[in-house]
Length: 380
Image (cartoon, rainbow, N blue to C red; front, side, top):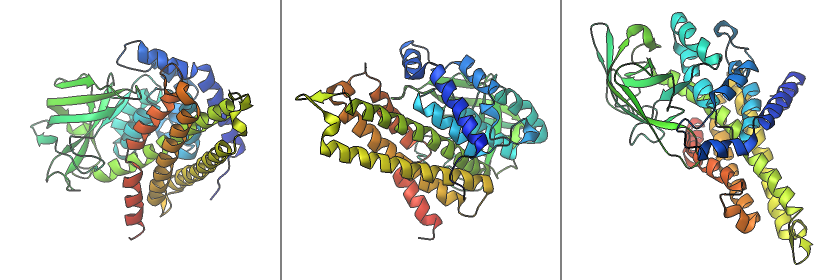
């Protein structure tokens, strides 16, 4: 399996890095957070990403995509992770839109994916419910048959990118009980449909999220994604793809936090001596470097495995998420500590990486969950 970038990917990496740096950096994320707006991102920046082709990378040409795969998308999310870009590239394109691409009819894909890939429409996956944790089958929201289709009733929480979204991909139960794999059906629901309401959630990392209520929301059979009661496999595949895209973002965040810390170690003096010359700090920095490189290899392996649809792809996804979650939290913790008292202040940017590490670790399953999943997939 190739674990190095080809010429095309190196060009993409350069473009993504230049865009991320030119978009305003971490300071832009701070300004959006402090501005009081609940949307927490800039739709104009998302449109610029679409103009550069970032939103189309992982989609097939039949849907208007570039067909470059996850291995290329990870390059972009890594660059965006370095500046903590808040735009919903992952929740809208790598997660919700992927579910439509994987299971939607030709008509639904044409209607929904076109605006999403163009950056003019934002999608969000409404999956999590109270008590569901990381179990994708823990769906209680009901979808009852009506004369024209279905009627949805229930609540979803922690909908990433869900506040101000233009449409939702909703997991609903058409039969069975919560945590049963059969009976889950996916629907596309426009955000302006009667009975849909969203309330913004406040997150430690200042990312956009919402609790969404579906109160007797009527949907047509044409808005169903995949076959009735067979939505779980689509949900699992879309979540795996989004997990790898998130791992790329986390890789970028930890790399940036590490590089900022090394720079600080080379500038900060104590007792007239650069703290970077202290042996204990050298050893800690070396450990962080090793953890980052191991995480990088795991992420690249998982992305390429999903692109090539290898038998061990799911296991490699869990391996990557477990290692990246541990590494990002470790790097962020050490970065704050090595910066000393200034690292604990909101005025300094290093603390934002620790907050993002904590939230990202819990998204799509923390390290403990994925170690357990990896073991089960390996037959233990």
